[in-house]
Image (cartoon, rainbow, N blue to C red; front, side, top):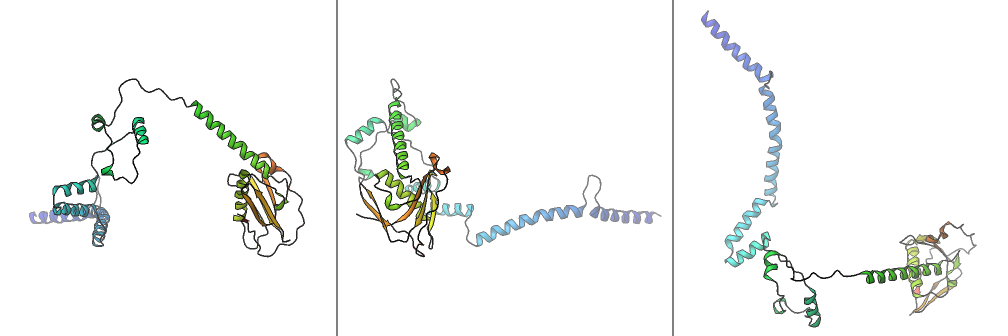
Length: 288
């Protein structure tokens, strides 16, 4: 009876161990599940190690290899001065210097300028206060400077901006054709209006393609629109300016000011034109 009980306990322990390997209990996971979790967690780590080994074998640099190489350079440096230079180049932990040039220094430089070709070692040095070198800040003793009144400068800038706006408006009004007209009938243009005309013409010609007979374009600021149509009557247009004569094949041109409500006007009636040459494109040249 005793031997039978011992054998029974031994087989029961074996069966319990086998069951605990596959079956989870309360508050306890089975050994098979734990092993599977550890294996799944080890796969990414193993792949990361393999990837690092492949990168090192392929010659890609890593931080540890860089530091070892830098340590070898330090060991091979001939003297302390070379090691100091290597330290500054590698880490850039040298002291910072902040410099503010005051009005007196600017006036002195204006009175006695230093040529740009002068080497740094031969140029006159700038005297820096020890307090500025030590603390990074320096304030002059005495009363603070008065706040500059910039009202007059702002007023002049406002006058310049208003004058430029008015000149641009007059140039737009000068170029508006009120309908399709021949380029030869534009007449003489002042320099500002002519510059605006060239920009509009460039926007239109930028959309011109082989075989194109008519095109339309809007200026970069969206303020004007130009419509250009090629003619085939062999006529030549000349636009006179104070700087010379701008000439080229005559075209039918329509310039619209979109900022003044002209863009809402009814489209002009189509003008019968002779058929343009196939593949013809405008070519303009400026006479000297």
